[in-house]
Image (tube, rainbow, N blue to C red; front, side, top):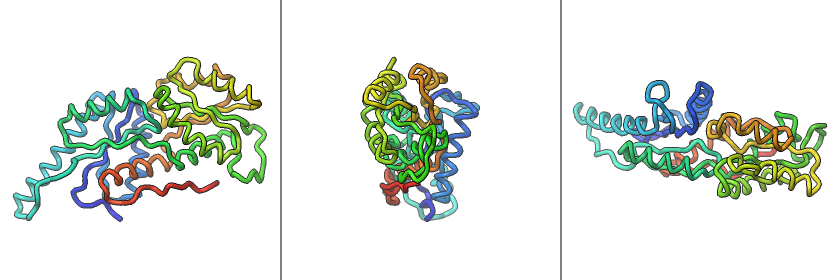
Length: 278
């Protein structure tokens, strides 16, 4: 399957302070989406961009809308029979694993500022593919077995997981859904905590210890750019446990970004609601 001709652009809304690392991550996510849907017009807009090296979300949306009008005018000029552009010029997909009201509201304002006809999708989670991605990141760090059957042991495998997110209490509740899926994969307790609520990670770590978990690990329920530098490290240190890496450009992230885009336009079914066991 290829992207329909003239389809709305997919615009990835990247939170956080722009950096070469966040740009590389966003480009990799976009590359995964393009590999799944050839011909996809995919762009990157930064919530805190500078319009030079890192284009702002509003400017990217305005450009996408202007490009669509230009294509229509060109087609008319060469005598092609074309209808007036309808529907959104762009579909904005937040690069967020879970809800963060502050960031989502800023994305909405950027869409308004652009004056472009654009639709905003939900965040990427909760979703079984994110539970799979968390499992993989934990196993990469030697903090979880790579398979559910426990056919081999890992000496450093955690017996309790703190699922660390950002976005306050709403984000913690949403992360809990993916946490249940992760707990089913690992057969260990998983509890969510908010990095942006002081003491939350340490408090959840104490609860897990109180219920009998002795070897804890933090699983960042984060793509990466949405969390301030040092926030994750500080919380992990306070809780006194090991940590896996954020989700980053794990293939499931690119697939879910594309799924959100396609579902918004109704051009293809969403990503399958199941994740394969490792």
